[in-house]
Length: 387
Ligand SMILES: Nc1ncnc2c1ncn2[C@@H]1O[C@H](COP(=O)(O)OP(=O)(O)OP(=O)(O)O)[C@@H](O)[C@H]1O
Ligand SMILES: CC(=O)N[C@H]1[C@@H]2OC[C@@H](O2)[C@@H](O)[C@@H]1O[C@H](C)C(=O)O
Image 1 (cartoon, rainbow, N blue to C red):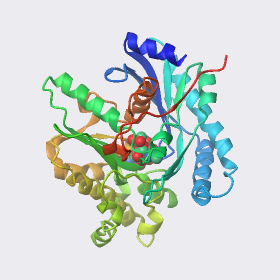
Image 2: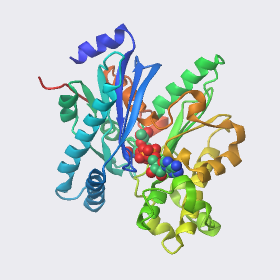
Image 3: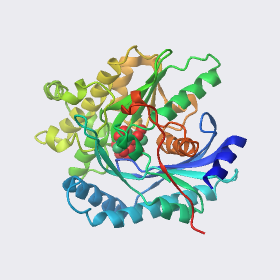
Image 4: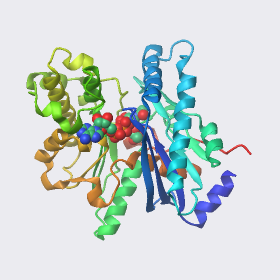
């Protein structure tokens, strides 16, 4: 069957489904792209289906249990239920999307799963990462082959296991250059997710990518802790607060921000608890938001050259305070994904569709400059639907 898929892709680009359930536990993003594993030929429909509060609670419990478990002893009991709940939520989201899709049937799906724990390699010791997600159950539900577990092979080979979207970011920049007709593939694709990360690309270099530090994660946590919702909508609280600059100067000394890339983070490596627990709601929100923005700027400044295009993707691009910091630095070079015709909230889901196609074709999905793996490698497990 895998051979059959390879033959299909050899004949031409195919429609592929991709899923993302991000660290903010807000919902399932599902998107369609048409690809041959190299180029993005077309964008199809996409949707986000929010988790119900019960589903979110189940995932949040599994995430907390994972942090306490920390790879030692038997797996927490909550994992099995969370895995089933989130896999079914993914299947439902895809079925909903396909109801509104009148194009050709997708031939494959790329399933990221839900990261509950991520421990990058330290001092030559391999790292470990865990994405909950039952690939076989999803394949059965959708009646479609599914590629899942895309981070393990990279980690087994000594890589960070993240970020994986960079090879897709590169394909997006290539597509934009092709559409402009100038052949200039350079730029930065910035993902403003729970954790922030980017891919930097310029003529004559292999693309460089890494997690820059916290994104929306600690801000969300802070707002939720105060009973003010799941996130700081339009930076309402942050804009009413004062940024504690002294704290930012202190935190940015953390070795993570001075370590050479590649590097990656667990969503809870920077938590609001540790950072702003003694501040007012507004000052805490302002300081956490400024911290995320400043660590992004600090990381981009470490690149070999200054980008003349910075494309904002991910939920944090709806946060006006983060965007203000970025635009003070980059001016007109900073653009929203939509300016290039991309779908800023669907990029990660699209990336996993692209990665699934590359996995089936045995093309590399991670690289020395993106995850620190010794040589470019593929990854992922392919499962077929049960008959
Ligand atoms: N209007 C808005 N104002 C402020 N923040 C917003 C707004 N809309 C979305 N966000 C932020 O975006 C987050 C969701 O972003 P996104 O879906 O990219 O995260 P994710 O996919 O879970 O993250 P990751 O990339 O780390 O996996 C929300 O939790 C919130 O913090
Ligand atoms: C371990 C893990 O799930 N990491 C996520 C997280 O969310 C953003 C950032 O941290 C990134 O490294 C990664 O996701 C994207 C999709 C990636 O692998 O590129």
